[in-house]
Each structure stands twice: as C-alpha cells, then as structure tokens.
Length: 168
Image: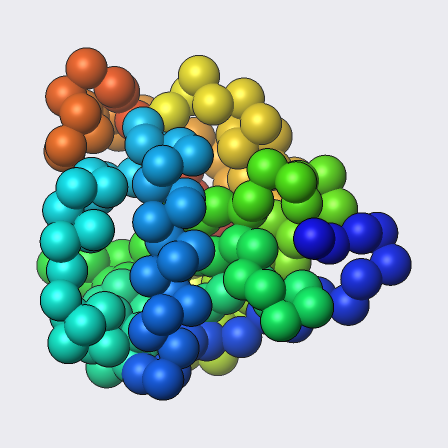
C-alpha cells in the first residue's frame, strides 16, 4: 500500500480499466456505504458491459483513480447535472492511504478538470457529520450552501450542498 514517498498517479479511467474501477468502487461502497448515492448490491450486480461503460468515460459520471504501485487506492468522479452544474461525486481513499494527501490530489484533479472544461464552479453534496470530508473540502475552498436533502438511497442521512468557485 502507499507510503508518504510512494508516487501517486491520478488518471481518468478508460474502458480497459473496468476491473480496476469495479474493485475500487465496490471497496469504497463496502467501506463507506453512507457516503455514496449508490448501494453496494446494485453495483455488485452490474454486468461486465455496464462496468466497461462506467470506466469508458463516455457516460456520466466520469471517474478518476488514484494509483499507487499499480493498485487503485482512491477514486473520484465528476458529472454535469440536469441543471448544468459541475458535480464532484464518489470521493474515496482506501483507509490505509488516508492522511497521505491522496484525497487532496483527487479534489485538485476535479477542480482542474472543471476549469479545463470551462466551468467556473464545482458543487458536491456531503453529510455535515462527515467532519473529515467537510474539512478536506473546506481546505479546497468549498463553502456550504443552504441546500439540504436526504441521501437518495439512504433517506435517514441528510446531505448539504457545498460549492467551490474558481477565482481568477
């Protein structure tokens, strides 16, 4: 697993990465089931073709993985919502790699992608009780908005919208 000195590669997935994406996303769903709008059972039932489509980047969301020594140790996704907002989604880092700056690099990658795509802001939804995630997002300039809602697949969990605006 990663160490402080291990090189980390953040890259978008491609169709041939479908098994990498499957492994890391299922690990994330098992480790942090309340942090995602997708249930483990749903994702575990995906066919190979569905995983290939998810990894291909041709559909939303598009995923990036954090690779260390050939292993996927984290992921993050982005998607444009129906209201045309650029969304950061599915942020996760393996528990053995937390505290090494990988999450920060993943968030930076999404902010950079947003700017490269002509977006001036990024939004996300997070449980305010997830203090570690909230702290990470605040360090990257995200601010809470007053919008709250129940997590789609777990209505007992409330999430709040955060927003980052690109400053020239």
